[in-house]
Each structure stands twice: as structure tokens, then as C-alpha cells.
Amino acid sequence: MPELPEVETVLRGMTPHVVGKTIQTLSLRRTDLRIPFPTDMHKTLEGAVITRTSRRAKYLVFHLDNGWNWITHLGMSGRFTIEPVTHEPLKHDHALIELTANPVREQLAECTAAEPNILLVFHDPRRFGLMELVKDSEQAQHKLFNKLAPEPLSNQFNEAYLAEQLAKRKAPIKQIIMDNHVVVGVGNIYASETLYRSRIHPATPALKTAKHASELVGNIRDVLSEAIESGGSTLRDFVGAGSNAGYFQHNFDVYGREGEPCNRCTSPIQKIVQGGRASFFCGKCQKLKAN
DNA sequence: ACTCGGTCCTGAAGGC
DNA sequence: TGCCTTCAGGACCGAG
Image (cartoon, rainbow, N blue to C red):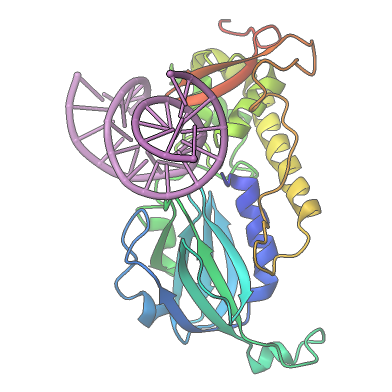
């Protein structure tokens, strides 16, 4: 269940292994994930150099030297690993990308010896992931990106902005902070964690929480950045079979803790379902449902 | 303009 | 042991 911190960790772990390298071959082992692979994916990727990587919401983006961006999303169960070129594809290995080191890259101080080719493997049992191609200059206008709200860790996501968004919504606050039109990257886990810290009941109508926008902004930022730090500190080695890079153990206050004692007041953590998603909260600490 | 529920997918977990 | 059901979840989509 990669959320924004996990996606960021995957990005940071993968980047040093892929930037500056040429995509020698792309091997697709099926024709689609959640949506079909782009028809010209081989033509666009093969021969291109990965110049840099970036993240927008939960999308991982590989920027290529031919002006195209290779967009990827890990969905629910997706992961990238780096394997030797002798890697035998496993079940659910859907895309294998062979990368070759460039002469320029080999001139860098830390690359004294010629680097072997590596295989970047995309593995996704539930196939909620996706891949897409877009010109770098057109990414922001692309269907997947043009309605996305600000990044939670950016200055555009601030008290005034969030208060304005909350004031016009009466749906439960839990669902609103998970809405990509309000803020991106806050998934089911971190939504529950944020509301726990803010002492707001997840069923509170959003408009009644507008006066707490400042605290919500702060807690969303804190919860996500702490998880990114946690991911970074447990990221050992991105390379190797079975590598779980990006899927780190993290301590949650409420998520998945139904019946266990609240860390603040020892009252048992409760679970409700909102919009088909589990919400966890402390019924004693998170009483704010009005005012 | 906003809200709600359905949909995609597989594997893990629980009931009988 | 094994079959069945339920759940997990991001993001899009259409209906109200």
C-alpha cells in the first residue's frame, strides 16, 4: 500500500541507480495494468537516457532525454526493484527494463569501473498500477495531472487554501483530506493518523473543521515527513531479489489498531467504515463533530 | 458543484 | 484440508 512517503522512498532509493543510464530494452509481459500500456512505449523508451526522476502526488516520473516523460503509478501492490540482467521473471513481473551505463556516467568519481547492465523490474500482483507517456512540456496539462491539488509539503498547501476548501464541503473530513482535488498524497493510513493528531473525529463534516485548517496542514505535513524520514532510515539497499525497498515498518497511533489502547488516553481504538474505507480513531480523544 | 457507490485486481485471512 | 467469502485499497467514472 504505497502512500506518498513510500513512493518518495522508492524514488530516492531508485534514482542513483537509474539516472544517467540508457534504456537498452523494454520487455512487457502483458498488454496492460489498470489501463493499457501506451502503444508506442518501446519506441519511446528504448534508446532514451533517463536524465532525472521526479514525483507528483503518487506518480513516479522518469524524465527522458528525448523530451518524453515515462509516468508510473504503483497502485496498491506495485514495486520497482533492481536486479541483475540474469533475473528470471517472477509471476507479476510485468515490465523489465534493461539499463546500460553511459560513458559520461562512468567518468563520475564514484564510478571508477565500468558498471554492469541492470534490470529495473516493475512487479504488481493486483495491477492497480499504471504506465503512461507524456511530453515533458505537457505533463501538467495531462488528464492524470491537470486536476491534481497542491503537494502537501509545498507552500501552496497552507492554512488559507485548506480553510477555503473545507468551508465548501460538508462530506466527512476523512474523505475530504483524501480527495486529490483538495490535497494529493494523503491516503487511507495517513488520513486516520492526521485526524488522530488533530483530535478531530473522522466523521466530522469538513466545513466544521475549517477553523482548524492550520493544525490540519501542520499535522498532514508532520505525519508525511516523519514517514518519509522513517522510510529513508530503514532503506538499506535498493538492489537485490526480494528487496522490500519502500515498504518499511512504521508505527501508527491508530491505523490497524482497533481495540488496542489509545496512546494518549488508553481508551480502545475504534474502527468505522467511511466511503468503503476503514477509519481508525479514538472515540474519547477525537470528539470534535461540531463547532 | 459536490457526493456517493461501483469498479478494477489478487492474495491473505477467516469461517465453516 | 479445502472451499467459500470478505477485505484491502487509489483513483476514475457515472448517476443523482
